[in-house]
Length: 245
Length: 336
Image (cartoon, rainbow over the protein chains, first blue to last red):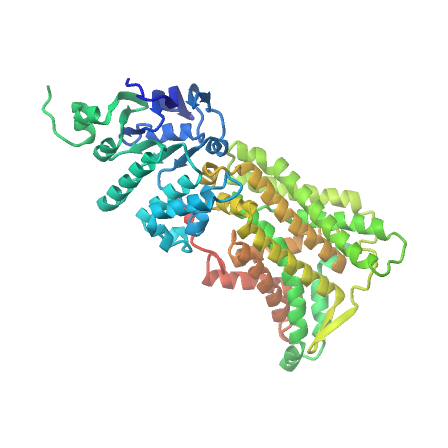
């Protein structure tokens, strides 16, 4: 397994996660270096979302551990994990539909005493579309706008590590390209990103490194370029037909 | 027997205001006065309805023991006011201060009982992922327990009326032909202040934002750093305080008793549903509409005050036929 080129920010070591009798993760080990974008790839049900939920404290591993910045965080409830600077944009965006766009952004800063006006401005600069809709109920936004709002809301929590779960889901290709561009910008500003994606080609083009999950286990890891060149990845996730060798 | 009397206080009041002669001219004559009475009833319903709607928002649960929180607030304030007044005759500033003490103690006892209720009757079920039916049964059990506990503790207090430390029927002013008595003024003013306060709390404060976030999407609220358990607990406290104040006001006007919560509780629940369960402003509007509807409709010459309760629920059914999610109820987002 490839190691992070920089000091690791997140270490996930041998975690097993169960939903009752079902073992969603068997033994997952990977790491994310400070400042990296790391992509988790895999088919539906491979355990990508479960892995992210375990990092953000929504789920607890039955074995193994999660360490952030060198300290164990598994077992810390989700509402305290965010205080460490781990912000999770869940699958399906989950904006608060009956709150306004502005209120959603303020919710993102809930962990702070006051909303940081500068951060608020910065998010609106990143997503100008949201500025036009500040007073609008979030439930009335389009899918792409809701995704932007969900990411903007997470940024209001001033993340060191941003967990993005399927940001491209259900969005038009043009909007997906826009959102991936913004993820790159966010990363350039110093935020480490753990990205879960089904859209493997685009995710690997963006990510420094990636891991492939299959039925609850990491089966492959490498830099974005390595994985893009890997026959198995090409066959399974990029839809290319490769002659059996 | 004695509790029967005050349970049916309201029809009597309405009857007193809509006397014998049965033609529609009288209904119009009585209209201003009946609107004031409707406002008095409606603001009490609204205060209690807020508790149902707040708790429903965060737990998707009808807290059927809420009517007993109302009752507990009434008894708590009754004990405090009784202790203050004793056999003395209060004068001057002592009177409004005693009313204030009643309001504060009603709120405190209501909040405390609601807080304990959540811990005892619901929290363990929630922790273990119990089915909705278990919550319902627990709610009914808690309701019966509290009501009978109060009966055991207090029925021997023969006089269930608050001590008379001020003349509740004292005429303060008239609007046209409508007379406003001191107790009506206190009830409406207190309810309005509480509702404005709650509206600010829900929309402007961190606690309110947290309550709304948990109501809309609890797992995501946790990702924002909101402690769901603590927020639920505080929601019960806020709803309990409002019900406790309503209990004090109701008790001062109509007396207290261990099953006093039942009828106002059911009406307030109806009001919350009418306004759109889970919607805070809806509960206020629902309460006010229900209060007006039952007074105005039962004052109609061919209806009569004894139809009071029938009228409230007929109004509920009619409005739900037109708007199944209540007046301000929206499509349930979380179902999408």
